Each structure stands twice: as C-alpha cells, then as structure tokens.
Amino acid sequence: MRRTDKYRFWLVLAGLVALQFSVRAQLGNDRVAPDFLLLALMIYTIRSRPGTSAAAGFLVGVLQDALTPASFGAGSLAHTLVGYLSSWAKAVFFAENMFVNGCLFFAGTWLRNLVEALASGKLKGLPLAWELLVWSSLQSLTTAAVGVVVLWLFGRWIAIRLSDA
Image (cartoon, rainbow, N blue to C red):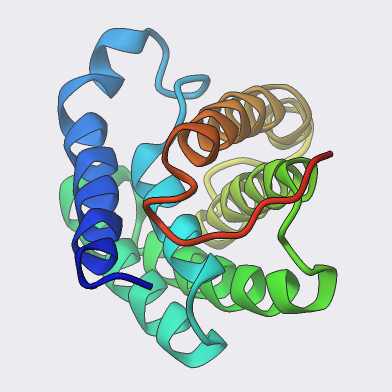
C-alpha cells in the first residue's frame, strides 16, 4: 500500500459524511434516501477489527443521536452493533466480492433500522412491520446500491480487494 492510499481512504469517508449532510435531504423521503453516514461506517469496518469497528459505530451513533433527537438514544446502540457485526461478518464471508459487499451493506442498514425501531419503542404492531418490511428494505436497497457504486469507483483508493462477481 502506498503512503497516499491511507489519505484517499479518509477522503472517501469524509466525502460520504459530507454527502450525508448536504445531499441526503435533497433525495426525498428520509426513510428511503441512502444513509451515507452508515455507509461510511460500514466501509470503515471492512478494513478494521471488530473492536475498533464497534467503537467507531458508537461514535457514529452518538453523532446521529445528537443530530436527530427523535431516535431516543437508540442510534448509538444500533450503530455499535452494526459496526461490530459487519466487521466480524466481512471476516467470515470474505468480503472481497462486490455482491457480498452489497449484501453486507443491505443487511447492516436493515439491522440498524430494526434495532433502532425496537429500542426506541415508538412503533408496535402493523406500523412496525410496515417500517421494517417496506421502508427499511427500501433504504437498505438504496444504501447498498450507493455502497456498491462507491466501491466500484473508489475500490482501489480504499484498498479493498474486489474479485469479479
């Protein structure tokens, strides 16, 4: 790995964070728009160990809780869990394939939404089912699609080996 590669990795993550706060509001409904902040966390976890990934997830969750008080503090728990599990899963599933990475992004986003919905306790019954089956699935799909595009465009910058699918 070249010396400049680590700077490129952080540049890609900073770009995703900037997209979260600049473009995401323009993409329509928040329940469907891709979550660039979670995507940056998951790209970080692809290269990190589970412990550091959980710590990064906690920090991202605290940031989300500070910016969206409607999450009732459930963001830090959800992001910590997703950070740890996605780092662990990439080691188990050998996330060197674009399709596998897309599935990890989809599952991580859906799991985060599940944990937030259950931990906040604001949805029960049919609204909870609708949130998880429709809105969470759509947001997970858009986040996974953006994640695959980011890996396709910047895969060499962030030093992730991707084999042909």
